[in-house]
Figure 1 (cartoon, rainbow, N blue to C red):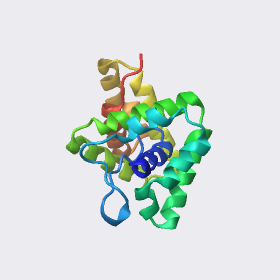
Figure 2 (spheres, helix red, strand yellow; figure 1 turned 45 degrees about the horizontal axis):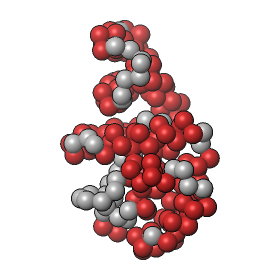
Figure 3 (cartoon, rainbow, N blue to C red; figure 1 turned 120 degrees about the horizontal axis):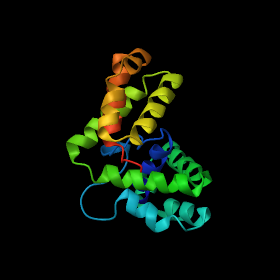
Figure 4 (cartoon, rainbow, N blue to C red; figure 1 turned 135 degrees about the vertical axis):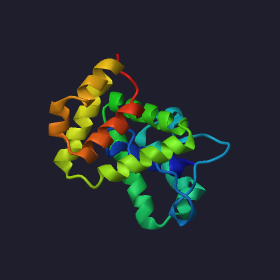
Length: 176
């Protein structure tokens, strides 16, 4: 479970919005299904531990030990990156992981598809999509629709990018 928690954490650190909420199975790592703690729950429980204790717990986890060495290294680097973030950003990541865990399977898959498409965009366009989503989060639904349907929005973003912004904005919690 620890390895899967750090996997979610690492993936949660890459893009700013929920990041690849992937559930891995088979040879790619443990699967977070069924009873037991969820990723966000594990992170909430361990977020106040010193980084060295978190790493020790991760290294001692049997599921982590079964992963290939390169995957173990990626997870450790993800944990280190997470711990280097400001506390507010770490909390947002934990909260977003919790949101993803509570989505129905079809919506989790839709979110995975969106992030897969995001990875095909050049970095500057990914940033533009992220910024648009952040701005839309602060709007009420009517204002958001006006922006999404405006000529300026349609000129600024390609049809694929428009779909990504729309898709991501429906998953983002409103910030008031």
